[in-house]
Length: 164
Length: 322
Image (cartoon, rainbow over all chains, first blue to last red; front, side):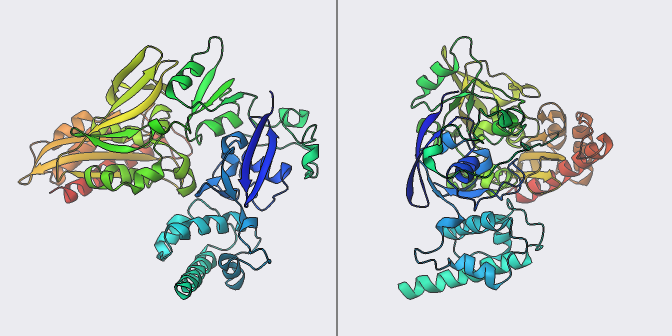
């Protein structure tokens, strides 16, 4: 099948690629673009390891074709850190609060938490747990992940208030 | 199902100049033996409904529309679906949105579950839709998954069809011959089989706004977040001075199609919906189920759970009714 010319923005960088229609977004990111933050876990839209931010929504990039993402703005975990390499408050909090063990789910977990806090910066523990219910972690039992997200939210809110 | 990946999974090539002729690109023999890579297809992103219907009705081609894609794409990966033409409806803004129109809610087929959850209009007039949306899949899937996709897919595990049966919704379909309306209660024929004809696209859902102060509940038993129901029940009912004046009960994933439990609903009408009446309604609802034994449990268990879901849904709907 003929390849299609697609254009999208990935982590604020304009990207063009030739993609066969059946190429999945996760494969475009990882194999064509070398962006290996999003992981391939279950490949069936259950585990959330491949989660990326697409046009302001968290999506599982194993269940989106690259051609469907043509024209989209994508942010992966690589896009969260500052240009100087300083970590995003979520990344910092995951490190500080031990929000990961093996780390496989972490890029998806963090990029999902990022969108969640954009939508509502003040979330209860129950809301956080509901919000990350599409991301599986087989190590932590979620306790430290929830703790890290709460801590990051507080940090981000403090920074926002200080800026106002 | 076996999920296999190519044996020689070579190091990723990151040089964009080498995109052509890549070792791990589709078309490479490694991909052909991989069960998680769909069969080849041509992709279209029409800019109008007319264009979409034109593409869908090309002679001699197996074409399918894709809405949110979270049912179709997994099926394509398993090669259970092999459309030659994939028609992506994402740019058709005319198929999105929620509005109130002469006593009915009109919801565009491409409206996502995330949008249904956030709609104040629906929360005020038809809250069972929000309650149901929240138990479908997970947050990521709900950003993509659409009402129309959930309804037109024909998978008995989908949650929205039973809700639409309970609400007495009407589906609007458009094809090359024009528009027609299909009542939800006549829509479902079997597993993945609906009244939608080849070349037709579900465009909108019309839901008669339930009476002010009605009670509602969608009770779903599932093993984990993201799972289909072991059994689920939708109840919409109206109470006046402690007496039920109208009730509809429908069931999810308990037969080849969603089920309207008409006699169960009738058991409530004219009563005060006390314990004995609820028991009778649950018994009648269980009587029309024919689930298959699967990973969610043996038949007897699923029928049992169906009864529990119906009882809970009625009790909660009654509690909410004013």
